[in-house]
Structures are given as structure tokens and as C-alpha cells.
Image (cartoon, rainbow, N blue to C red; front, side, top):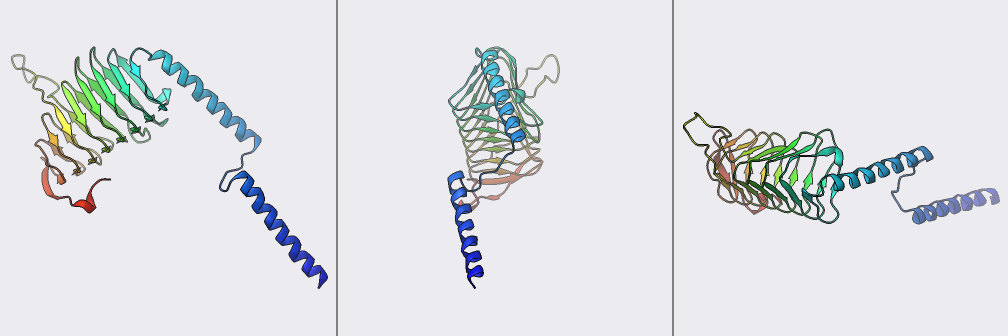
Length: 245
């Protein structure tokens, strides 16, 4: 009886000691061996070096806000235009990249807390001379191509998936005697563009809209609308429970 009681007491003491050890270390914290710790330190050092190199290389063309996390491998800027980033902008390290092709006097403005995911597709910003692309706060990109000859404006909390194209011009003339037609694109806040959507010149899309995958948007879409098709047509209105958060 004494040995059984002693074993139970010993077992409880070991449990208490294990709980105290976890409390001191922190619950849920992974345990790494020496080799893994060395690897993580090397990656941290690499990111630190590339971060300083990035700031030095683009010091005259990229204005960074506070706490931006821009991975140099995923960011490519060509041309003499400027990029203005708000606070806490993230460009992930992934299989693809975020490209900026900016002609003179063009500008891309990126709002606070915008996140670029680079695992599925490239994100491309292309601006003609004097054009501007403006993104609101808390936007999220998993791909997309924004081509501005005049102006493209996207509101806050807008989600854009791979294969989405926003074109504010016809990109080229139909013949030598005609003029290149351009008209600004305006996208509201809390909108969702899942994938493979084309938004053409002169389109205004209101707040809290969802556009179906594979659609071509040629006409304006009012607030709180779900639109889809070629060309996109309003399928139904979006009520408060269906709104994009």
C-alpha cells in the first residue's frame, strides 16, 4: 500500500513540475533543436540584410510607413515613378512577386495594413506617365493586374484574387487616326473580386459589392450588389448579413 501511494504521489509531483515548466516557458511554444535555431537566426540575418539593401536601393522612389514588412525578393520596381506605402504594409516572401512598372510622374499609393500574398500569382501595377493608382486601408491581394493610364481608385477592405484585371484604357489605338480612350476606375470599400475578373475603363463599383468569378464589368454597379456574367449584370442585392467584413 505504501509503495502504491508513493508512486501516485510521485506521479502527481511530476505532473505539477511539468505544468510549472510549461508556464515558465509559455504554453504552445515550439521546442527547436540547435540546428533549427541556427537556421532561424540565419534567415533572420538574411531578412535584415535584404531589408537594409531594399531601403538603400529604392530610397528615392519608395516611401515606407512604419512597421512595413517588405521582402526584397518579392518586390520589383521598374521606372522612375514613386510608391507610397502606409503603415504595416506586408509583401510576403512567396513563389511570385509584386511588380511595379511606373513611367515618369506616375504614383502608386498603398493604404495602411495592406497585405500582398505572393503564393498564387504575381501582383502587377502598371502606370503610364502621370497616372495614379490608389489603394485604401486593409486591402488584400492574392494576384491581380492594375493598369492605369489615368487613375484607378480602390477603397478600404477590398479583396482581390488572382487573375483580376483593372484596365482604365483600351491599352492601344484601334487605328493610327483614333485617340486612345481612357476613363478612371473607382472601386468602393468592402468589395470582393474572387478571381479572373476584368473591370474596364470608366466603371464605378459601389461599396459592399461582390463580383462573380470570370465576369467582365463594363457598366457601373451600385452599392451592396452581387453582379456576375459577361457583361456583368446585377444578380441580387446584398443585405447586411452578406456584406464583406
